[in-house]
Image 1: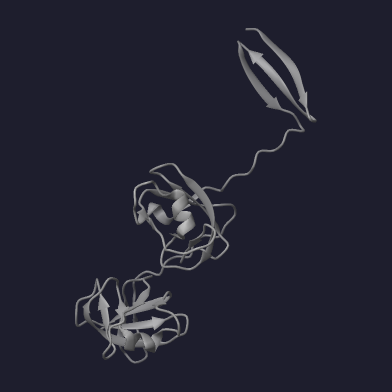
Image 2: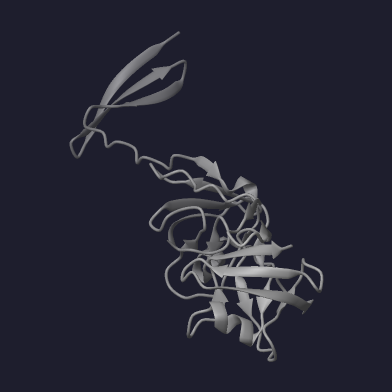
Length: 226
């Protein structure tokens, strides 16, 4: 086996070049720049598809599990594209992309969600907040409230009339208690028709729990009243 070594110097950086059996290897010297530290790589969100919302601004995500400021690296496994973005707000989901983040990751084919993704915590970020599991509880009034549609937002329908709600999951006639966790206001209404989400309140019901100028309750607790 033949080997030789040589010294290379440039701009104050030196390397040792060693040739063994015709193959060359470079060993960085003491003045060589350190490699950039990468993300911690702890995978989160359990590989669930990621949706997007139409919003402007720099690439970012909203989350109901990570505090604002957390950095997440998101990789679209379908095309290999990856982006590191901060959590900028709250939403009903582990990571909901804004328009800029979604455009940076999606393929050419139009789709409303990224279905094969990997989400990783970047750096020394906190652990995700556990999502509340469905449970039953007894109110002081004695009414049992079983939490349903855990983590879902509550939307507004322009339908008038007496307070009522629409649902894609609960049958007509079901009574639900909706609590706005941001302001503590709540109302109990009956499902009167089929809607596009777990619970969508009509105008009269939304006025009882919502906030002026908003058409969605982002942090809500929905209970099936029995």
